[in-house]
Every structure is written in C-alpha cells, then in structure tokens.
Image (cartoon, rainbow, N blue to C red; front, side, top):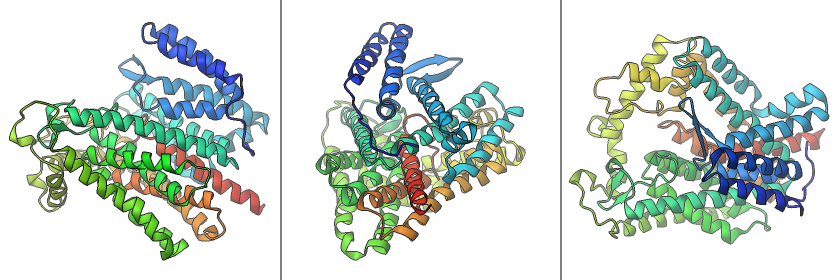
Length: 484
C-alpha cells in the first residue's frame, strides 16, 4: 500500500507524456499506429508515476476515443485500465503474493456484494441473449469497480496530495465537457427531440444522451461542494468554485429531471450531516455554495433561453422552457399518462418486470435488457431504450432477483462506510478528510437517487463515483491502520 505523497511529475515523465501526446495526434490519421505510440508512452508514464496515469484515465475516459470491434466500442481508457491493472498486480504481488493482490483489488469495504455481482454476471453467461455482449459488460464492471477503485484506493492511501491532484483533474475534465455542452445548448446543435425553450437543445456533450451528461455533472457537484467549504487550504478554492459553477450550469442545461433531483437530494442530506456533525454555524457557507449557486444557474439558464443563436423555427411541441420543465417534473408524478417521458419510463419498467418474472434466477444476461425489450416491445413504446432506466430493474432483468439484492447490498456498503466514518470519527477527522468523506457521501446520494430513473454505469460518466469509492475506502483503511 502506498503510504506517502510521491513526486507526481519527475523530470523524465515529460518525455513519456510527449510520446502519449504524439500518439494521440498520429491516431487521428493512423489509428493503429497512433494507438501503439500512445501505449508505449503510457507504459512509461505508469512506470514513472502511476497517479499521473490514473489522472490521464480520468481525463480521457469521458471522450469517445477508441475503435469498434464486433459491434462494441472499445475505448482507449480500457487499454489504460489494463496497463494500470498490470502495474498494480505486480506491486501488490511483490508485497505478499496472492493474498496481498486479492486484498488490494477486492477492496474490503465493498467486497462481498461486488463478489455477488460478478458471480451472478458470470452465471448469466449460461442463459444470456448475447454471450459477447455480456462478456464485454463483465470486463467493464471489473475495470470500473475492481481495477479503478483499487487503483484510487492504493495511490491515495495517506496521500492527500494525490487526492487533491485527482480532483483537480476531474474538475477540469467535467468543466471541459460541460462547456462543450453549453456550446451545443446555445447553438441548438442536437436532434429535434432534445430541443428546449424554442431555440436551444438539451446538452449531451460527448455522451450522446442528456441524462448521462447531467449525471456526469450531478455526481461531481457534491464532491466539489464539500471540498470548497471544508477542504484543505492548499486546494485551489477559487478555481474549484469556478468549476462548481460550471458543473451546476451543466446540471441545469441537461434538463435532466433525474440530475436536478439527484443534486437537490445530495445537498439536502449533506446539509443534515453537516448540521449533525459540525453544527448550525457551518450551514450558512454550505448553503451559499450548495443552494445559491444552483438557483443562480437556473436563473442564468432562463436568461440564456431568451438568446437565439440558432436561427431556426421549431414546432410548438418543443417550446417548453426551464420553468415549464420544472412544473412538468411535478405534474408528471401525479399525471404520468399525460407526460411522454414518464409514460415511456413506465412502459420500460413494465418490460423490466416482465424480464424478471420470466427470468427470475439468472436474468437475460448482464447488459442485455435492451435485447429483451427489443424482442418483446410493450405496446406504445416509442423506441428501444439502451437500458431499463432504473439501477435495480436493470440488474434484476439482467441478473435475476439476485441482481436486485446485490444492487441494494452494494449501495448500502457505500453509505455504511461513510456512516461509520462520520459516526465514530466526525469530530476527530481532519478538515481535509472530513471534506472527502462528506463529498463522497454526496456523490453516493446523487448516484443512488438519479439511478432510480436512469442507469449510469458506463464509460466516463462513472468516473466521479469510482474516484470517491476509492478515496473513501482509502480513508477507512487509514483509520483501521491507526487503530491497529
């Protein structure tokens, strides 16, 4: 286990970073040659400074860089994760053989439910509707929840400098993606189905869907909020505040109701934790950043909605502005049949229940609900969805009833880990540690709440969650080490 702050950028790493950059440029004209050059450079980066390699993963994962093979997209971040996994395997094996490697990769805090998820995923290969598709999904889950979480935990153990470095890269990445989304929003660069407020479009950036774009922002917002209000002085608070404003704007211009509710829930429950652990005196500053900034971004979006840079005329069906979107978010709960989006969600959920009913033990195969609903479309379904738009129904349809149990158990371990840290050590935690635990809790809440109406386990969008899973686990490991 790493136990000190390393030199992140030793002199010779710049040569390897230059090779990585050259590989990226060459890949624009010669993909395979560029990928080979990139790989050589990245191996050098990881050998010299693994945290920089992980930071490159954080930076590049949201961008659709990769190749299509057997109808599946393989990202450059997948290759990066494999190389990082080899590095961590070598390091952990040297530290104590197989047992050390197992304890390193299968993080203790989340181990048991994760084993259940992976075991059910492998068993689903026996009945899957697409063996290749399920295999790819299993590899993705290993990349996300085993490899990347273990890497973040390993490299941030007793290393605040590395934690701070990661969050700077994450804030920069999300801001960059959001600014691209703002460009789309302002110039109405998107399909007619995403048009809002007459002359604008729901932002998607590089994700292809507004809800995913919103989730990338809504999972990052609580983390930045906690670090700005309670984080270490050495963090660039002004720069992070600018990023927080951008992230709040990103949540709004996604027009994702799931993202709006997710961050509202995250701020609310984080506020309760702050009140319970720090007292009312700290709520003022927290509310200023956590409530006033999002409200201001709603007002900014309403103002931007009056600006026409699209020079297009659209049908009245797409005239819904921000206030109307908020209003219909409430009315959709009481009159779902009259709201297209809600009605479609209900049809999809009904199909997921049918998949669980007909495949209760092993499901239809990890990642294959979209094939089931395509084969058995419910009456009134407008288009085949890529997922069940619900975390538990997706895992239930894919993996059977055990998938629902695993999902509930897995997410409970996240909250339980934070609860144990706050309950036992809230007053003793340093400001830096308290901020990370509080921000991790907020990200967990945002993910859990949003995933009641969507399913956000995919490349790029999942990065904020993986980052806080690893760091919260590292902090829990530190506290166990102090007690030993």
